[in-house]
Amino acid sequence: MKRQLKELAKSPVDGFSAGLVDEANVYEWEVCVMGPSGTPFEGGLFRARLSFPRAYPQRPPTLRFTTDIWHPNVYPDGTVCISILHEPGDDQYGYERAEERWLPVHTVESIMLSVISMLASPNPDSPANVEAAREYRDAYANFCKKVQRCVRKSQDE
Image 1 (cartoon, rainbow, N blue to C red):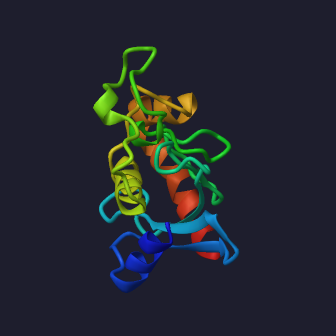
Image 2 (cartoon, rainbow, N blue to C red):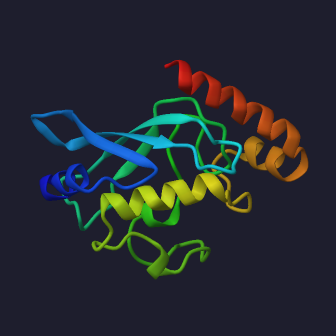
């Protein structure tokens, strides 16, 4: 993990920044995700915690936004729900293929690029936030208004 952090510091990736919450704990990272341009999230600076289990990279980290965000694939508590952060192996519900789920080859960069992609292209058919998914599908203008409030709030924080 230290190697990944050094690499990100040396060669930053567009769309996010990352660093340790506390220099003494390599398992807790703070990331800042920039809202993708051309989306309702554009202009937002969304902070999140990336928490790695001791069994990393065999087990996936969790990512939880600490900035308010309105998105179909983010639980109301800020926890991100995307395939690559789901435990490895077969999906008991048959929704995801094993190769879509966590694999030890994933890096912080691949995780964060997936999160940025999720912001740009929500999946309302597999919602973590049912109300946000409903609005995204049925009342897109209202969805965008709520997202814009989150964007403005993120800029003030």
